[in-house]
Length: 307
Image (cartoon, rainbow, N blue to C red; front, side, top):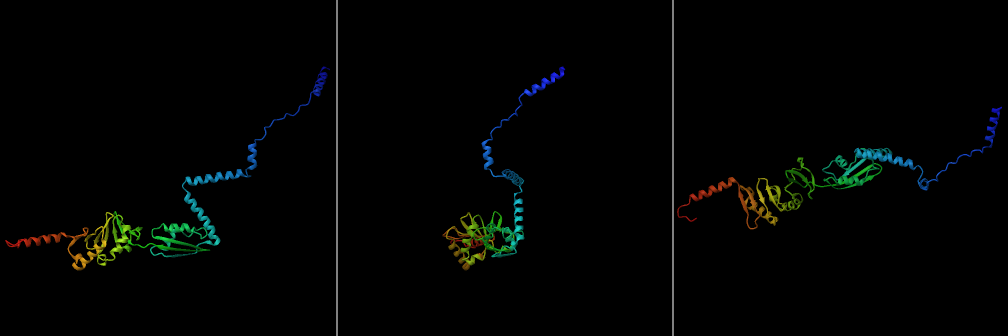
C-alpha cells in the first residue's frame, strides 16, 4: 500500500512540472569584412591562389637550381616543334654577302638551327646576334612564309695585321679586331705595330700608297708613342719619320732611293725627324770599313800637306 501511494505521488509531481524549453544558442552576427570578401572576390579564387603558389614554387626552384636556360630552351623547342608540325618549318635559307664566313657559321651566329620555326623566329634578335660578330657590319633578315628565310649581310674587309704586346690580330679599316691571326690567308696584309696603330693605320697606309717606291719595300709600319711612325723595311732598315710633314718626308725618301739607291746601301737606319737634315746610321761592318778608309787616307798624307 505504501509503495503504491509513493508511485502515485511521484507521477502527480511530474505532471505538474512545466515542460523544458529547448535551450537557444546565441550566435554572433557574421563579420562584415568577411561578407565583403565573399561578395567581391571572384569564385574559385582559392584554386587560382593555389596554382599561383605551385607555379611560383616551380619557378623559384628553376632559378635557384640554375636551370633557367635549360627550361627556356625546352620551352622554345616545344613551341617550335608545334609550329613546325603546323607547316612553318624553315625549309629554305638564302644568304647573300658572305665572303669570309660560311653559311653554317652565319646560321650558328644568328642562332638558327634545325629546330627553329619561321613562325617564332625573332628577326630582330637574329640581326642583333649577327651584328655582334666583328666580321658582320650589318644584316637584314626577311621571313618569307611559310618556310623561307632570307639573310643579307655586309661583311667587313680584312685590312691589316695589328701587333700589340706580342699578339697579332686581323683588323678592319676602322680598327675593329676581326679575329686573332691564326691562318696564312691573311699573310699578305700590311703589318702595323703599336698602341693606337689599329685606328690610325688607315690614313697612314693611304698616304704610304702614294709612294710605291717606299711601300713596296716596307715590311711593317710602327706607331711610336702614339705620335709618329717608323718604317721597318724588308731588309731590316729602319726609317724614323717625323711627327709632322710625313708626306714630304716620304717623298724625299722615295727620291733618295731613286737617285742614290739609298735602300741598297749598307745602312741600318735613316733618321728624318729633324726638318733640316737627314741622319744615316751605317751598319757595323760599314762603319769599320769607313774608319779603316779614313785611317788609310790619314797615313798616306805627306808632311806639310794641309788637313
